[in-house]
Image 1 (cartoon, rainbow, N blue to C red):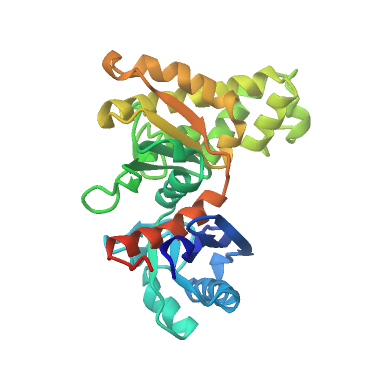
Image 2: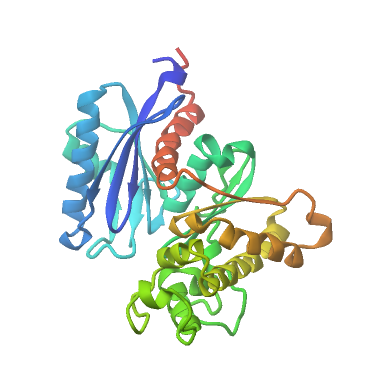
Length: 329
C-alpha cells in the first residue's frame, strides 16, 4: 500500500468510554465508534470490547496496518504493556498486543502509549499543534495530563514517563494531589479539586446563577456549569475560571523555563472554557518566564476535542512503521 494511503485503528481507552477510530494517514479520522468501558467488569471484558471494535473495523477495511492505543497508567518503553491504570479494577500489567492478537485471531501490530502523549501526537499531525514543530501539551480533565512534542515526535524521557505536568508543584506547602505531591497543579485543576474550590468560592455569592444551576449547597457543581454560567455573564464563574487559568500559567512558566519550548496547546474537557481560562494563563505566563524566553510564547486551545486521542493513537502506528523502514510502495 502506498505510504500516504495507510490506515490504522486508533483507540482512546478511558475510564468511562472506549473511543475507536479508523485513521487515514492523509485524511485523518474516517470513522469512529464509542462504547462504554465498564471497567468494573474487569480487564478481560475491557479487552474483549477493544477486540470487538478492532474486528469491526477490519471487516470494513482489510488493509489496516496496525492498532495504536492511548491509555492511562504506566506504559513500558517498548509500548507493549499497560500497568495499573487508575479506575480500572483488577488491572495489573497486561501485554496489549498479545491479549488482542489472541482475541482477534491473527497477528496484529499493537502499540500503546500514555493517553496525554497520543493526544499531543494527534494535535501535532491533525490538530492545532500542526502549526508547531515542538510544543507542550496540557490536557485538563478528570486529572491534568501533559506531554512534550519535540520535532513532531513525543519526547519520552529516559523511561517513557516524561511530560507529567500534572504532577509539577506550584506550592510545596499546597494541597495534595492524588499523586501525593503537595501543590501539584492537578490538586488545583483536576475536575474534583476545581469543583470543590468553586463551591467554596461561590457559596456566599448569592447573586451567582450557579445557585440555580447546581443544588442548594452547590454540591453538584461541575466545570461545565462554570463555563455555561460564564457564558451567561456570571462574574463569579468567570473569576473561578480566571483563577484556574492563573494556576495553569504558573506551572507552564516553569515548563517553558525548563524546556525552552514556547508553544503550548491546551486540550481536554476543561479547555472548552477557552479564553475564560486561557487569557489569564497568557497574562500569568509572562510573569513566571525569564525575560530571555518570553519572545514567541503562544497558548492555543485544541478544538478537535477527543478526536486527537484517536488520531494520535493511529499516527503512533505510522511513525513506528517509518522508523522500521516501512516500504513506501
